[in-house]
Length: 358
Image (tube, rainbow, N blue to C red):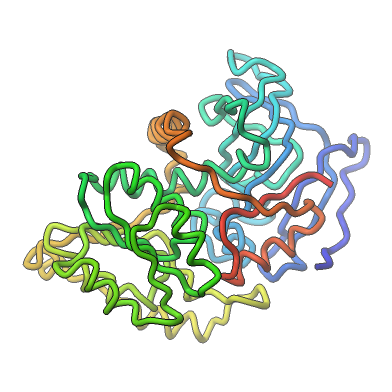
């Protein structure tokens, strides 16, 4: 997929760092690979020489101009990306660790699609030696999303019944693994037959292929009294039924609205967005109280203001390695970032997509 020509670095600067820059909202042609000057870490910061960059569906929403925290914290131009893996190149004043040369995972609030990033010291974590850069770059965003949803928002107990939509994907697979790790029974929903095996590999007790069977009849057979937790990033397509299948004292956790977005073409269909917005369920607090159910939502990009939550989450996740299995990755060179975005938008992928420097 062809990208726009790179914009040269300013006169007098070294042309070393490659990064993807989006100057205004649009489709894949807005992803410009540019060359910029080397970075320098400031106080308390770490400079990472990046070996791999994770791709998330949220990055596509950033490119389309629909991601609220991107507008709040950055605006245009913007470089997408929440996660990288590489080596520490330099430490800023007051940053004590990790030492220069250490293999690390870095969390970024945007700016991750670059061959160098500068991040606060508390967003850098030593990379386990057995974890490759490409696998590590695809690990934190989806597993932190799952950790916050299940550990922070839902008090998991052994034997709970959990429904995970999109169970073969990055977040869905992480949700399934963490729920199983805590002794829960998981019904994983997939949208096509080729994803069934991936959901099973993540540990789903039951896999529901909604392209070939009635999703909610199968769910009711698995959990006749309803689910303790339902995790939904689909939006209007399933939200109403997801809530209806939460048992009293249960929780519906919302972390996305994927079915409102396009699966091809790279641009939102604003007429469909408007219709879907009108069709999206509204939850009445009186009804929630009477039915004894909870509805919760979150966006991981706002959690960078709570570094203790990110550190606690990463600490748990890294300590669970061996019982948790990082996702298989599909690798794209940075120059083919548009192809990676098209692939993740299509809804046909499993596991994680990762960019590497050309």
